[in-house]
Image (cartoon, rainbow, N blue to C red; front, side):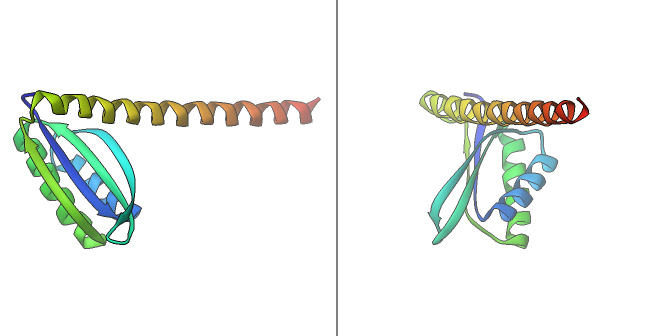
Length: 125
């Protein structure tokens, strides 16, 4: 892999959102995964996984850590430049998990909208 993997581990969802927002705005990176982790700093943590060019990932992780620490606690962060090819398998799993979560959410929204429209049409009849 010629790119880099960036990891930001935040304590709490709000901290994670602030970190991800800043990281995404700071550089051209791709969110490849998000994991909820129980037990980080004796709380619920959120691990954010980013990928992109080495300099972009470094800038994004730095910006994310800075913004996250203003809101809450960033427990850990790491940039792995040009990770070993075996790490690609892990990155693919992160990406696959994120896509599955997005598809599941979209399916749920479609079902809710269909159910809502059916109730509306039943009332009109």
